[in-house]
Length: 163
Image (cartoon, rainbow, N blue to C red):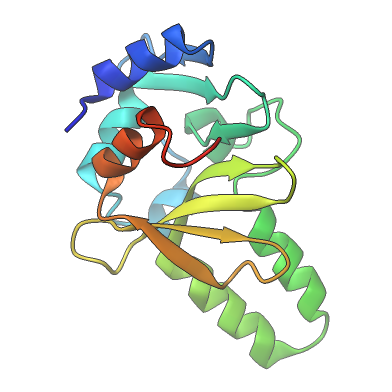
């Protein structure tokens, strides 16, 4: 299985825009920490090592500390697809509640705007932090792509998923 350092080196060689986190620490906003109390260790370690990680196409990017804390220059918010779903629900309280409950379970880690709005999230209720993929128009309908974050990085490096 690939390490985070190996992924960083692969990303650099593959012309991704990657900036390492020089402080080697991460401080997520209270809003994020309260909502997602048990972020898997591997992803937290990734955040400690990576400040920014944008694909070569510039159409896909990992969410990092600045995105979660609302300090990024990227136009889409870390919870953009939840916001869009809630807007679509309009005044339907039951639908809004289902959307919020769904997003409470799934922690967004990567956003893509390549061809369509899509994302990868960590299933916070799974034992190992399963990674699932969703896309428009039904953001809350997802498919499992990896058993954990490290396997997800390996899938990216192996080009089994196009980003």
